[in-house]
Length: 411
Image (cartoon, rainbow, N blue to C red):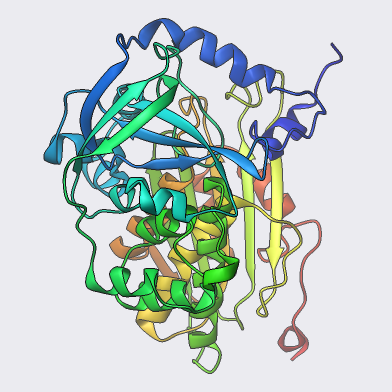
């Protein structure tokens, strides 16, 4: 097999298939290593969900829906298996998160994306979006396959098997607004914004969209989970951008910092009309860059109108956190988000940790407020392991190869 450039792997993260291979060899190798750690026996499984539901994309429009149950667990103990905000708040380790996800058994069934009411009629969809875990029973067609499944965007899941039947014995509990939205014949974009404005978190909205409960009645679709995650992030981000359109710019440069799960984030806010710059720096010897000798870099830029140079789920997750922060302050800004991935991030657990780490970094307040770009860059250099490589990629910070010029620079 020809050598695959690590730059391609860092962009792909195992799910875009940019190398042309049918399966990611890096993820296949990792799955083989953890396969022995996942053990589930029997074909009758009882427990509570959520921990949730995952919709695949292979075979579209006939996709697999994975109904996840932690065998023998109920209530809050079950709920914690799919609680990213709580994981981040409590600082759960990568090993602990993988352990929690490995305990989930996925009972899977084939669904036509054009028939979302199948999930409603079986109460599978309602149970998956319930605010409290619902007792469930799954009769599997055969014993589950003992393996962990990872990708670069959604959370990993444990062993899986085709299901003969799923019986939801508890009563799903939905917020009143969700009960209404399910039967509201309105565009999905409008529904997403209404749910977000009501206080529902993006994680809940993503599930509601994924099971096909949003949009015009005749046009509703079951949405693969990865697509739903990015779609909700981008829809909410456009809504937040509109709220910032006429807001004043911040009057100084601010530098924020956060670290979690082997990922380091530096956020720089500076006076400007709302452009974004996202730079990822994958250190050598991470999961995706085992063959790299130097940091592998990836950059996305987005203008104030939301036009970006590339689609990237990690950028979308970080962007919504920053826009929430700016809206809460009533201020606009240009934004630089730097993400440095270290070898201790040895397994991909989804984009949720990006969103939550950036949220917490901004909530803690800036490490520095200054009017000097050089002072801000000096702090950025101290916060990163590979500052020269990262800063050379930037158009928004001094020292970049393609320094962006504003008209005020000539005054």
